[in-house]
Structures are given as C-alpha cells and as structure tokens.
Amino acid sequence: MKPKNLISLIPVLALVAGLPVHARDYWFGADLSYVNEMKDCGARYSYGSQTDPYAIFARSGHNLVRVRIWVDAKWTPYSNLADVEKTIAAAKAQGQKVLLDFHYSDDWADGGKQLVPAAWAGLSDDDQAKALYQYTRDTLNTLKAKNLMPEMVQVGNETNGEILRTQPEEHVAINWARNAKLFNAGIKGVRDASADSTIKPEIMLHVAQPENVEPWFEQATKAGVTGYDIIGLSYYSKWSKEDFSGLSETIRRVHYRFGKAVVVVETGYAFTDDAADSAHNLLGSESALKGYPVSPAGQALYMHDIMQLTLDAGGQGVVYWEPAWVSTKCRTRWAQGSDWENAAFFDYKGKALPVMNWPKASYVWPVETRFAVANRGQAAQYLSGDFTGGVPVAMRREGGRFVYSAWLRPDSDIVVGHADAEAALDTAEALQVKVPKTGGVITLP
Image (cartoon, rainbow, N blue to C red; front, side, top):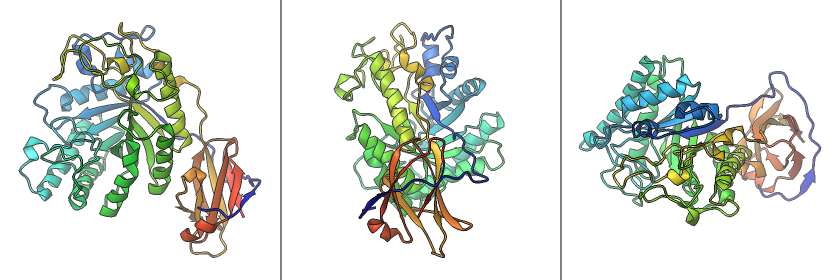
C-alpha cells in the first residue's frame, strides 16, 4: 500500500453477535528431544521441589513439548519410535501438548542437509513419495493406537533445501516438482492417519532463518504444496542475517501473505561463555544481540522479548531448542558432554535459571480486531496496512459487508487502507486508527 494521504479515523466499534472477544492458543514450547538420554546419563534437574524434567517444564508454564524422530538412526538408541513414545507419554501425563518433528533422515536433517534414509535411497521419486507417505501414516497410526497422537506434526525439519537427497546440497537449486510431491505425500500421511482420530494434528512446514522463509514458501505455493496449517521458522542470531526487527517483519509478512499461523519453532540464547565440559559450545557472546547480554538475566530477557515480538507480529508462539541438553558424563559423536550446556535452562549444578519462567512473564496479549467495509455490490474487497507488512489480504463477504479479522496489539496505532481491487491499494487513502483495548469491529469508510 502506497498511501497518498494519511487521515485519522475514529474507529466505529460494535460488538457483533457471534464475535466473542476471546484468546486463541499461544505456545510456550520446549524441545525435549534429549531429555530421555540426559536422564539415562545421570543429569540432575531442579526447579523448586521438582526434579523430573517433564514436570519442571509443565510446572513452569511450558504447554508444548517438541520431539524429533529419525527414520532409522543406527548410531543412537534415541529419537526412534520407542523413545518418542516415552516422551509423548510423559508430556501428555503432565497435561502438555506435543509437536512431533519428522526428520526424514537417519541423521540430523537441517538447513544444510536433508539426507535420504538409507532404506529409501535407491527408490524412484514416486516410490520415495510412497515410502514417505507410508512411514508418516504408519508412525502416527502406531501412536494413535496407544493414545499418543500428537497435536502438531512437522513434515520435515529445517527443509531449506530439497529433501531426501544423497548429498548435503545446501546451495543446489530445488527441483520443486519432486519436492512438492514429497511434501504433499507427507501431508497426506498426516491427514489420513488422523481421519478417524479425536486428535487431528495441525501440520507445520519448517524453514531455518527468517531471511529464507518467504522465498521458500512462495516457491512451495507455486509448486502446489498445500494442506498445511503452520509456518515454522528457526531463529538463531548466529546463523541469521536478521536482527529482531527483521524477524518481526518476516513473521508479519508471511502470516498475512500465506494466511497461516506462524511459530518460531527453534531458538536459543547463551547465559554464559563458560563451559562445563570439553565439547565446543555452539552459542556465546560472538552471536549475542545488542541489548541482550550473555548472562542469566539476558537469556531470560531474550525469551520474553522474542515471545512479545512474535505476539505483536501475529505469530502464535515460540519453542526453545533444547533447554535440557545439559553436560553429563556421556559422549556425543563429537565430544564428552554437551554443545549446548551454556544455552540450557539450568546452571551447571542443575538448578533452573530465571529463563525457566518465561511462560509466566507479563505479556501484552493481542486482541481480535475485525475490519468491516460496506458491501456496495463490488466483486471483491482488499485490505492492507502496516500491521500486515504491506501485504494485501482478501476480505470475506459477510452479509451486507466485507470483513477481515486479525489479532493485534491492543491500544496500538495502525495504518490501514482498503480498495475494491488489489492493485488499487497502491493509491488507496491510508487511515490511521487505534486498536480497541478489548477488540471489536473497526468500520472503514
């Protein structure tokens, strides 16, 4: 929207039958994929009187547990189906919901590599799609039979590059015809497994680092990837070109452009540069953001502010990766201990740090705000504003008017414009309005 004028408009507020002012779900998540291994390695945790890590995260307000699954990781006894069942059962016993993260690989799948499982390596593209579909469906059917169906499912993890590749081809152009076939197979596997389930998982697609998100989903949409519900993104300042401002703008734009919920499904921040073991720590002062010192207080402030930023931009939650991966006597393939103990939620004696309480911190919660334009017989109506990142959105015809609903920061000043044609938004008059404190309807002229 390129406004030619900026005029103030006092919002006309009305409570409409069938439009309750209510809260939607927000996610305070923790990826606990390492917890079972840490318990076996003798890790100690404490949070008040609580010592069980699953109980600690539940009591501190985390309402979502994320857990990864590899297809056939022969190099570790963890993150297989049996391990995942243990995690989901423990999380659900604490009243938490679960996000199951399919790494379609026998090893780490991430923004730099998406290696095909060994059992699928020699298959044709069509047969790989069938294998991915069957594996996804069968895994979820097994969980469903044990009353362990997750509430969310990731079809792939940090899938910046083409999935099911034989080499870590990070910068090779994606064959989107093949990629879309594979993603749609995974999405169908989730839908088919949940068709007769009381829990019908929402489906997330996940890309690493905000600067990659919008281009990836634009290409996926053009290629025909459809049927998903949530855009997930990783944000680590060490590996991203964006600061918090860029992250906020990305969330805002992709939420409105693609009409999906958005969750920051991976993030992390160090609380110290000191190490508890010989393993190389991945985060530290070299990747710190300005205003967020590498300290327990800085880590807690980071988590509060990234959540508030996400709420203000239209997103629905944040998941921390991996807050319980502490240092123990056990070894990884790289060293003894953890690469992450200085970014966990526990100090080196196992005591919970201040960041553990980020779900209980004070937040400004969005309110549901509905924009309404009179139906004068026009075929369509579009809306755009600073709160959409300039993305035009199609309003929905509802009786004698067009409407669009958004969750916005209460009492904030926003700029909005509307027009009968999407192209006309470039010259639409911009209206400055204030979001009602408790939500409601803003009727535009």
